Image (tube, rainbow, N blue to C red; front, top):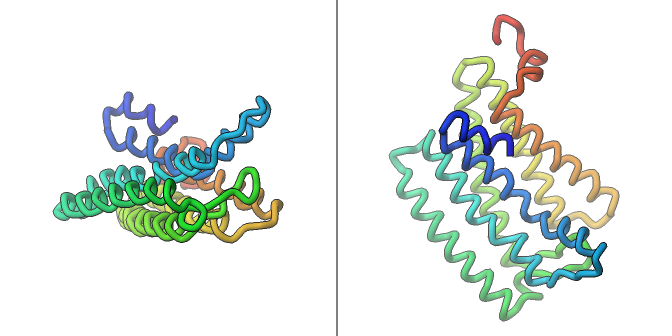
Length: 218
């Protein structure tokens, strides 16, 4: 939210989009949080709704991120990149709803535990595709910050790389491989840390800047 509201101060749409993006990539876990709260009121959220919350924003968020990415890099290919990914996004959303209605258990998934989904092939493949696409573009973006030669931008780039590598690794583990509750807790704590690292990478707070950069570099 802090990143998002910087839009009103600096009038740069990148802040607005990045704020929305970082909220959006938390949606695969948001259905679990909503379910937890609703349990206190004896309300059970339908599995279909939970899968919708957990999936449909990811393709959209990927396209939003590529709008930001191509505003800085690969501008000459901007139309091509956005067109291709928008078509992929629309196609994936269509088949998601189709499979959710026709064959949810085999192609979308089910809930073996109250707050964690077991994903089936369609969701696994498409989510990994969007995750890897975002990771590659994000690392390219961060690399440009590091190549800039400016100490503050270099530090921001390092935080961004750490943030997205942490997020990607933990998202894959949490979604596809974790079964022990204590490991789930540890991985989700690391996911929370990735949000903090991302914040440092996009808006480097002054205390962190003073702590990690030499005085001559500030």
